[in-house]
Amino acid sequence: MRMRRGTLRGLPLLVLAALAVGVDAAPVGAQAVKIGLVDLQRVLLESKKGKDALAKLKTDRDAKQRDLDAQEKKVRQTETDFEKQRSVLSEDARREKEKVMQKARRDLARIVDDLNREFGERERDLRERLVREITTVVREYGKKNGYVLILEVRAAGVMHSSEGADISKEVIAVYDAGK
Image (tube, rainbow, N blue to C red; front, side, top):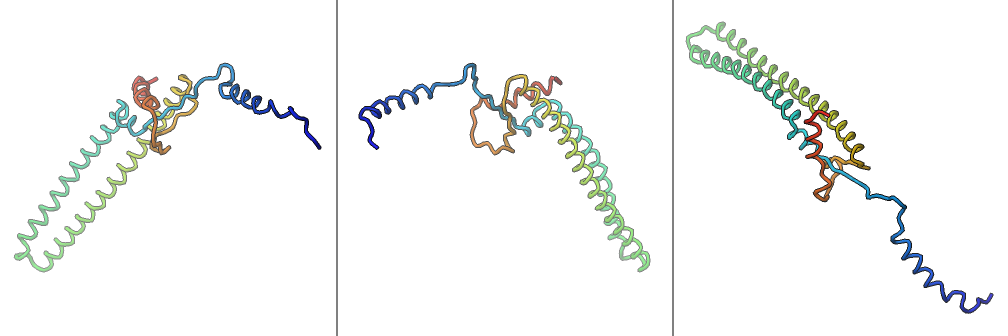
């Protein structure tokens, strides 16, 4: 089969024209895609609600720690008194006091473990509640402001973004306003 001369002559020009038109061709009314980033840790630590909730938890923990310190001081004082009296105590009295001190140490260790577990759970529950609230705020903010996608900075593993992409400050303001 033989091609006619001149059939392909205009093809390169036609391809270039199509490419030139296609490069700038965008759907009518197309807008830039808005993508935002939020640093949840920053919102938790800098928002009024986050600060207040974490401060209350710290106050409760500090109060329990003071009680614990007083109990620990009492146990240490009992041990010090025992060491001073050890030489004058009978064997039975000494064994009895040692049992009492061991029980006091075990009780104290159990209290420490219980408090650590309790406050660990309280902090986890508090953070989960705050993150749920913040997530709701982020979703509403995103819808209201036309964001197609909002990512959490740390979870998404963001390596680079423009400064304008981080909306954490705006989320903090909306969250604190309680809207």
